[in-house]
Image (tube, rainbow, N blue to C red; front, side, top):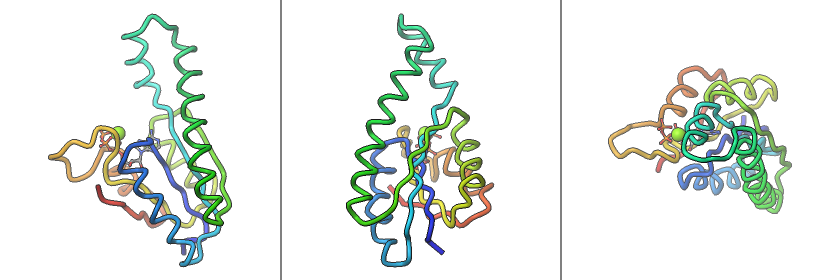
Amino acid sequence: MFKKILYPTDFSDVANSALDFIKQLKEAGAEEVVILHVIDKSSLDALAMYTSKDFLQIEKDWEANAASQMSSIADELKEAGLEVKVRIENDIPFRGILKVEEDEDVSVIVLGSHGVSNIQEMLLGSVSEKVIRKAKKPVLVVKR
Ligand SMILES: Nc1ncnc2c1ncn2[C@@H]1O[C@H](COP(=O)(O)OP(=O)(O)OP(=O)(O)O)[C@@H](O)[C@H]1O
Ligand SMILES: [Mg+2]
């Protein structure tokens, strides 16, 4: 049931806290983790409005930053004895997550209930809500 895990992350504290659960899922048969970050074009647009850098440079910086954070997450999971694959997608976050769910034929999705916004009044973030609604596979939601 937990053989191949899709772990979408926005590098928030809540998403990071899912890592401990993922390591524990090894005991329940987990073998491989696909770490996924989706770069959201509308967030890039918003960033581009507030800096003098051009859009392509911001996108490159964002990708490099994501790749470096993912590589330390990958090391941590490898140390725990899991196989790791890293993917960066350019898409709307929930759509990118659902696309990789299909592509990689994962067994389960493990994500945070909230992410970088972490608004107190919200029961769930908008990305986790859409993924729970639309995913085909079971979703394990790690609470903040
Ligand atoms: N861009 C992303 N790429 C990959 N995973 C993501 C991305 N954004 C969110 N996630 C995943 O979804 C979880 C919930 O984040 P979500 O964005 O729904 O909450 P939020 O940031 O608090 O709220 P909102 O984005 O609606 O303002 C995160 O912990 C992470 O696992
Ligand atoms: Mg968010």
